[in-house]
Image 1 (cartoon, rainbow, N blue to C red):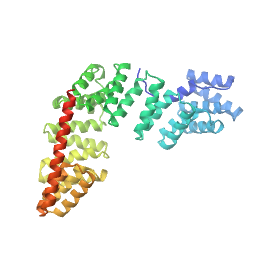
Image 2: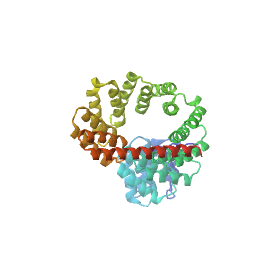
Image 3: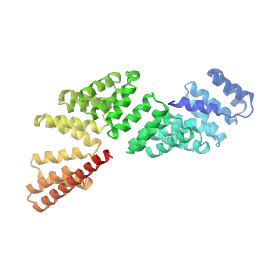
Length: 410
């Protein structure tokens, strides 16, 4: 079974693990919570802490009732009170971690998780949620360790394996991504999240036929999933089936109009087919949904470049926005150098290219372009040197490509 956990999930786990000193009041509160009688549970919890203000478990119960009743601020105060009274109980820390995360106080959330897990290192749900939080904050290696701990504690947790697959893929560990995705599918054969994780790992390894087969297996029950159609479209792009990819990606954006990546991929499919008007619309839609992604601007610049000199002002505008988001973007800086060369500003082109090569010494395009600039400046020795470097890098790239193809057949 593939499990998904949120704030409520962790709190319910904490409730199940609650150990209250033999007290009829505590037992009554727990019974009320389990029965869903939240107002009654809240009343009894308040009575308990009023009668026994130093009863840490009572404050923990009160925090649980407040969460379920939609009072996160009151719940936070109750759990913080419980921590102050008993700093050796993991439960209030773990519940606080989710409440802090919900209000985007990530540092306090991480500290609360770490403290709680140091006290209870066998809490599967807590490790799962900790892993999700680490992923959201970009701490991928630590997130992977958290989900690995989940699989150690519960080898049947398909959700943890699916999360691991995505993390390994983000960390460019494609083999482990595939193995984790495969394990997720073995545990939950028809689950969408597990199958998508495996398909994405296969796509990264250029095994697009296998990925397409995996997705076809679950297509009938996932026709209303934008994520399914997006991943299917990605597979079809890898197979150069652009017409089918366009159909899949159109379904994805229809099902989820806020899916910026689907608009972007749809734009690249149109671009591959030479349908520039449609491609431009899709790239602009992606930008409107997520203006902070520099990749979207990069492809829009290509559209305007292909349209010719009349669209150079628009290309410059989009290139400037791209560089504002990512000042080190290689393609954007190469464009600046190329435009400077075309305008006869060879010194500016030279300066830009020398800076690029300092940061990207293996950029063949930069060495080739700099070679032509040096020739134009009558710096023939430097030009020959740049040309030789470009040729050596080209041979190196061809050798690496041939080796990769050879490995595919072994």
